[in-house]
Image 1 (cartoon, one colour):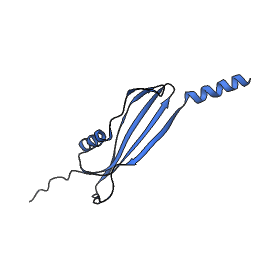
Image 2 (cartoon, helix red, strand yellow; image 1 turned 45 degrees about the horizontal axis):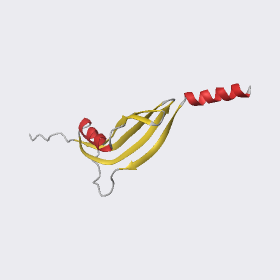
Image 3 (spheres, one colour; image 1 turned 90 degrees about the vertical axis):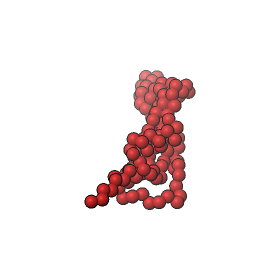
Image 4 (cartoon, one colour; image 1 turned 60 degrees about the vertical axis):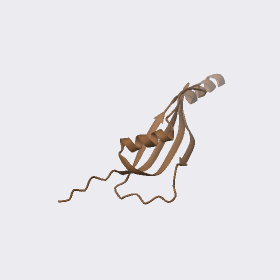
Length: 115
């Protein structure tokens, strides 16, 4: 009975996933001008793949790549208060290391037309 209960508990624990948060860091702060009122939060992320939590097959993109991708995709003229989160989602024998960049994006201002 104890073995069956222990086996059942082990299988239940192993079948679920878990997320391990590794780091959260501000990439720059300080004397930045205040963002314009129309600025928005944007997020870019990328993930990799690991087997058994030890063998890395692919790694997530570097934070500089995520910044450039955010600038281009969201057409950011200026970016403020970028924060990088790095965490790993574990699922049985595979794990997904994830890099997520969150920042405030000032979109390119529309051209002013004089009438």
